[in-house]
Amino acid sequence: MSTDPSIENLQRALTPRVLGALVRKHGQFDDCEDAVQEALLESTVKWAKEGVPNNPRAWLTTVAHRRLVDNWRSQSTRRRREETDLALESASGGQTPDRDDTLVLLFMCCHPSLSVPSQLALTLRAVGGLTTSEIAHGFLVPEATMAQRISRAKQRIKKNGVRFDLPPEAEWPTRLRVVLHVLYLIFNEGYAASSGPALHRTDLTAEAIRLTRMLHRLIPHDGETAGLLALMLLTDARRAARTNTDGFLVPLDEQDRSLWNRSEIEEGMTLLTRTLGSVPLGLYQIQAAIAAVHDEAERAEDTDWPQILALYDVLERVSPGPVVTLNRSVAVAMVNGPRAGLALLGTLESDDRMANNHRVEAVRGHLLELAGDPVAARESYRRAARMTASIPEQRYLALRTIRLG
Image: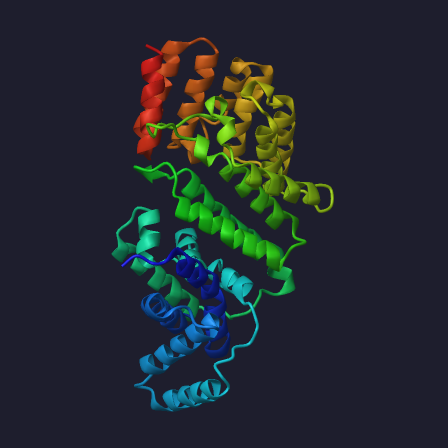
């Protein structure tokens, strides 16, 4: 049965608040999360038939609480205590504290004791409200595999005694960086799926933007959170132009810019304008600024490449790494010529972190093509096509090879 989009959106918005209320009260993250999922399933059926209740959050909290009582029935002492609490809540009209624990949940799901894949999965499940099936589909793994991953993550949280609270002040910057990184990874996987038949996973990009927007509302003065939201919006704004009517990938310099989402660009620009210069500069703000320069250009030939190169120079100082070098090589090529870009790209050949990254060969092919060396460009495109698991990128790279003769 398909879910009414309005109900689905409401469920996803309420999920972290309901789960947060239960975990804060009972401390059993795994049991509470299972109970909330059961309540969401029941709401899908009942709300479609009977309509959304006046207080949907209280409804979900009460039903999830009942599921906890049922699941703990074998433990009589705890059951009696929970049933007493539930009776008191029912007598009070099912009112729940007006408290939003979304930020606490984000920090818990992104706890450093969890692997990055577990952080991604748990964030999407507990905070994003996606089902295990949806998450598995998004990351192209069997549902049973994803269910095991989520289960192990919840058990690790329990085993490590992770407290349902914000980290101490001394840990805040480090832990927030992890949260932002997880949201960034979710967005990137949705915007350019690493494998499979689809170029975009709009469910993942939409969820990453929604969660980052929620985080920004909770900590509006944090520059990097605002920068990440701006980066997502300025990047997602180009989504409609990234493929043609036949589904083929369209590179940035060939896109129909009239298809770009102007409202997203305006919102991203506004966020960036408020942030730059008012808070310490961070990697997401710089990347957002680079995206903004691209979005400001009405035509590809109007792109201010010297400004983009200057921003990459700053990014390399703030957050050096091979991916920054890879992207910077394109800006160097556009300002100083393709051979200069190829020279910089060549510095990555000894970097094991990029040994299996198809984008290195794809960029090399592009720069060789600009340098007037079609034979070498074709070979780089072929190597890149063999290395990527993304079918749209394979098709694009094969097409580039054919065009070069």
